Image: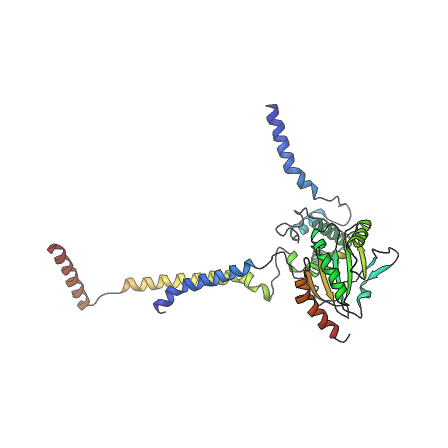
Length: 159
Length: 180
């Protein structure tokens, strides 16, 4: 029992330690609001480990950029100004949410275009099908159908 | 719509998709285009690696075509690139400057002594602040700066002799021919 408990504690601390490693000690009593800071660094992307935000990343560069963000905020800059600074250095790539501009129109509006296309195709198909079920046969055609069906029956009987 | 078009459409769509995905295979997602290309080099003034009393600043780049190479002794691929820089410094007259990024002075000086010094001068960026200003995210990186002090090109990753011959030198020659 005791060993089991120790094991669990051990395993849990393995999970916790790396999470602590990337955190700087900042003073949030001044004009930097901690919630604002956390929100900001979690929407900025680390350029070294590209699938992590600045908040998640353990990379050296992420650490430097967190310090940079903090110091910019300390100077009284608003979120927009801090983000603009990083974008001017590293490009739109640092943003998890890319801005809407001509080169990203396809990205932002493409899915809606596809959705609209899908709706058009479905509506057309349904209409066509509706029209088909309405088709009626003329007397001539009905006579031919009856004759063909009879033929078939006769054929089967003959076997 | 003729029937054969209907049957061909999925094939065409498939080929278009496959083409896009195939193209994606040869794109390196780690290469992030720098927004600084075409803009004036970010201003900086740092102590020189070789002489802490002297400074190197972006004003030193004016009037000539310069390369700024970002390097560090802890950077493994910088070691491979170093020979290329040595060769480049011997074979051309382009001014190569270094930004020694988040390094230690004794280690960096030892490196230059051991492997040769291709640089005209090195700026010593101990805390990496100038690096951030230049949008550095992975050493080695090399910037080409024209006579007016405008960044004209950035190469991320180690230079090879092939890249120097086909990418760096043609642009350097073109920029040197421009009237400054």
